[in-house]
Image (cartoon, rainbow, N blue to C red; front, side, top):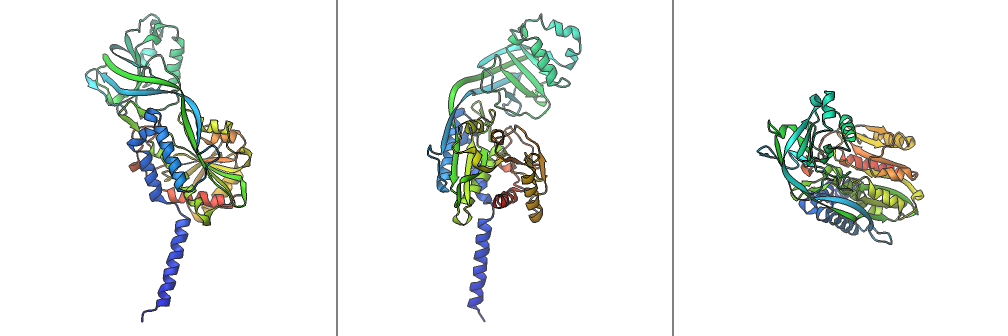
Length: 432
């Protein structure tokens, strides 16, 4: 016999369970959509070529508006200036008769000036440096019509720096360009991008080189933009009982952008993953049933890749009293988790570290929680230096792509993405 009452009860239980699951779990499809959008060609790598940072910031602002996240009186954007050298146009490097592929075979340093030419090479390797007489010979050679090729195999970075320092007043540094032969993975960076160097510098994979390196042809175009205006993106959800106390989530939305007009650095794990998690947390806390007693703040920083400049600016020009922050969690590269998670500052704030470990032990969210001491390696740093209790969380294992063209959405395993979300929510709920 059909029992309508029993069916209604079963449906009610299903609805309650669904609501509980929805309100207490990460919205992974939403996170993946954010990451896919952030890594699309339309964002230009979220750097400063084609104003990719502004496109990404506008997208973030619109997401916060959709989620009904409020802005501070100055609006969602906190503007600040940076100096940035932008590599533009075609970046070309031909060694012998082989034309190399940018991003795949070689990288050009972001500080490189506009330059081009076709020149003979001068090779420096560990064998050459091992002969003392050769070092003195370098003082006499005219390098103004040559490209210096440094084979890094067996040559430490310390030796190279010492060589450069010792020859700084000679023709050695008047070379047309420098090429460093690299055995490691090619990784690009923007840390030198606030100035223009004296000569182009290339990193080239050894496996991409022809057998003979006699002549090199190259072309680089760049232009410096002093005082470029970029922006942090900030929003908040007002607390019910203690609106003047804050729990903060930070994540940098910027990445490396473009190296020339063809080579894109998508930055899926670094750090589209962290921004997606932070947005998911704001989406969760925006639900009336999840609204906390104190105010939740979202800070997506720019210019982290230039030297954590966005968070530095925010801490020097805070939109609210930093001393009222109960705790801050910085999310950066969190799409894996096969080997657990790391808490930078876990060795500093041991009570908070123990609390997170206790929660994880009770619920078995992630494989393990490791800890480190203080480290100036992400956006938590300047908050920490201003007296804010904080963790920088990153996941471990799973993938190894970093600061290259292969950090793309389809490589992300999301091994512990949902469990990390639950761990963070539980930590915030029990934090006093």
